[in-house]
Structure formats: C-alpha cells, structure tokens
Image 1 (cartoon, one colour):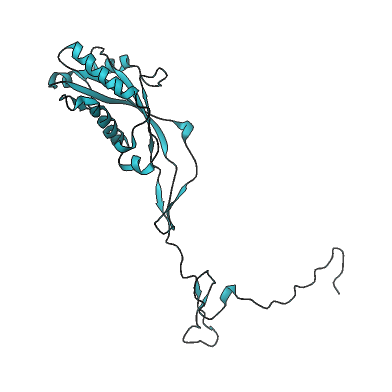
Image 2: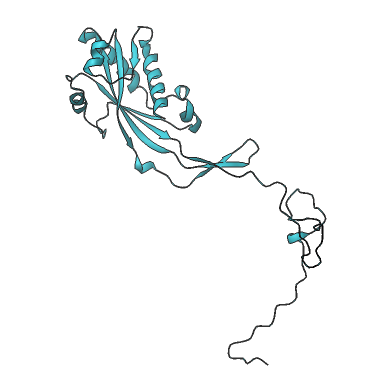
Amino acid sequence: MIHEVDEALGRLITESGLEASGVEVVFDAPTKDWAARRGGPTVCVFLYDIREDVSRRGNGAGEIYDEEGHVVGRRTPPRWFDLTYLVTAWATRPQDEHMLLSQVLTTLTSTETLPARLLGGSLAELNLQIGLDTAGTAMDAPAAADVWSAFGGELKASVSVRVRAPLAGVTRQTAPPVTEGLVLRTTDPVHGAEEPEPGRRLRYTEVSDPGRDGFAGPRDRGAPPARRRRGERQP
C-alpha cells in the first residue's frame, strides 16, 4: 500500500507542471550526502512517519463474490494508516526553491483526496477515498525540526503532508459452492451385499431427484411414548 501511495502522490505533484520544467520528484531521505550528490532542481517527498488510525479499525469479514454471484472468499476490513511526508524543494538559489515549494503547495492544498485516476493496485481495488491533509496544524507526528536534527543537517523550509490510506485486509478462500447435493450409499453388513444400494440424495432446489427420497423424504414415525406426570407411578 505504501508504494502505491508514493506513486499516486508523486504523479499528483509532477502534474503540477514540474515535469515540463525538468524538475525531478524523488522519495529519498534528504541527508547531507544526498544533497551533495543531487543534480538539478528537485522536489523531495520523504516519508518519515507511519501510524494507524485505530478509531477506524473494523471487525468481522466481508464476502467476496465471483461473476456468478457465488461466495469465493472472505476479507477482513481494511486498516487505515496515516503516512506523513516531509516535502522540500532543492535548487541553486533559495528563491528558486521557494518558487518550487509554492507551486507544490498550491497543488496539494487544492486537493483533499487523491484522485481515483492516480490510484493503482490495492488502492484502486478497494475504491475508497484517500484523504490528503497538507500543512495541517494538528498532525500527530514528529516535528520537522526533529527530522532535520536526525539527518544532521540544517533546518530547511518544508511542507508536511499526511495521507490517510487503507491497507487491504486478509483474504481467505472459501470452498466451492455445493451444486449436486449430498449422496448417501449404504450396504447391508449382515448379509454382505456386494454392491451398495442406489444413492439417496438430499433435496436441493433445481436438482434432479435420483429416485430415492433420502433424508428429505417423509418417514412414518410412531406416536411418541406417553410422558409420566411428576409423582405418578408406573403401572
């Protein structure tokens, strides 16, 4: 799921006009070594925090149907995770970096959910809305200053982006549907019959009757024995 969010977010940022300007969008950690090797204007989208939204965790399992309407499997509900990215712009001059960052910020703030056309894999299959929160003030994630301190670099202008995406549940296959019904064949253990009697089949809708009523057929049963009342003696 994470790599699918990366692809969708990268395509969204690229479509803001960066591709035509020759700006590269990467997902590397913006360390000192990376910054020294970088060539050309770049927008770095670094994933630095992953947390589950436990308030949206569901129970049970949903059924999966084939084209004929038969149940072929069961899937547990998806679990939702907050993916927090640190978006930075890298260029020769600070003015160019701010221009790139402003361009990216305009695109992200105008989008509350990732467009369905950008989703692929399990995200497209689930067909759920992927929330997008840009530069939010209530993000429960490490501060940008702490991230830069971990990199050992100087603080740089950045934008925090949180994507709330579902992780597909576990799918378990089910046995194929019963179409013929249960057939019971018996032999006489006393007389040692060589061949079993013709099978008796349970009655199913739209299934031909083999000629024996089997378990579903009417059976003659005697009246149940009379029940004694409490305190009554047996004759």
